[in-house]
Length: 165
Image (cartoon, rainbow, N blue to C red; front, side, top):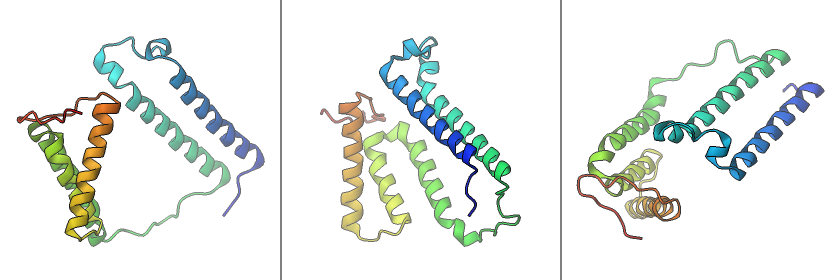
């Protein structure tokens, strides 16, 4: 494993320190003061995901620069994945797709616990009591956090199921 040159390691440390400074600046100011809330509701709601995407893109670019500057490139021929190795990721992807398609119609409370249960099952948990208790607990804790703490209205679906916390 090659160690970064001295000046490059200082540059990486300065970059991460600046990220921390930006995060604390955003925490201490409102969206209007930051110039983010000047658009409509869709533009304002997209501010955080946009910032995350820009940060990830910048980190990928920085990683590429570091790899090319230090001569550490990826293996020329990485091993190919076998088809059976893709079974679990495919099942997880299908679970999320089904969840996202059923969420508007059935609502959060009827879809989230089965999603968590299917994720746990896909990852290897086979005890029914543990599956049920864990999925229900995680769904209700997340619902409480979003609805009570963050004041986010979760989708109720056709049945309008919501918990009055």
